[in-house]
Image (cartoon, rainbow, N blue to C red):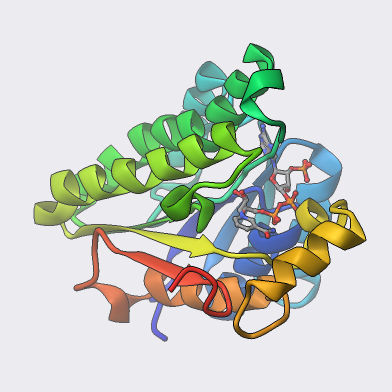
Length: 246
Ligand code: NAP
């Protein structure tokens, strides 16, 4: 994979899939701006990348806060000169059956998982268009394709991300900016470690490969979609799910 000294923003890079994507890009010489909610998690990842000989910096910002994202992105662009790659990965779950789902749980998931993509893509996507180069990768979920009982908020956000990405891909294509979706199935991270043993067993039984994936499985594909070689791929949704949603 070729990257030509690119610079990337990876949201939710403090743990799990985002951390794996940040590390994968850094291994290829990309300077990574590691975004997370808490200073400590993105700081630790950025420090580890730098200690390993890569280039990185940490940025603690709540991606659900549009004004904070706009300010952070403006400052980043001023300091870095350009951002070539944007990976919208930050996400949360607030699961519950619809009858018991509060409006707060609905709003928190929509704002953190979906509206954050709007804020970041607006702030960084247009400068990419002006520069006639960009790669945008949005981390959705197979749940955004097939739905899931108990996750109406999460499924709506992830389905929204898919439609958002296709629209952005159509808007930005003429400017050599691609936008694609990676839709993971069950991946071993903090997000899934809290699931009960019964739920984990039930989940495994519907995965043809009979096991959860690793964050590195998602990162490998995300990194490829960020590379020079992926320049003619846009508006696509790729599942990384051990065959679950085929
Ligand atoms: P995770 O281990 O829970 O990590 C989530 C990351 O997102 C953390 O770094 C967290 O920051 C950051 N984050 C959450 N809310 C944020 C906010 N408001 N502002 C800034 N950063 C915020 O999650 P994961 O399992 O790696 O999931 C990553 C993405 O993949 C999510 O979008 C998730 O929906 C998606 N996904 C995961 C799975 C799975 O099975 N794990 C499956 C399908 C899709 P802090 O470190 O500061 O807390």
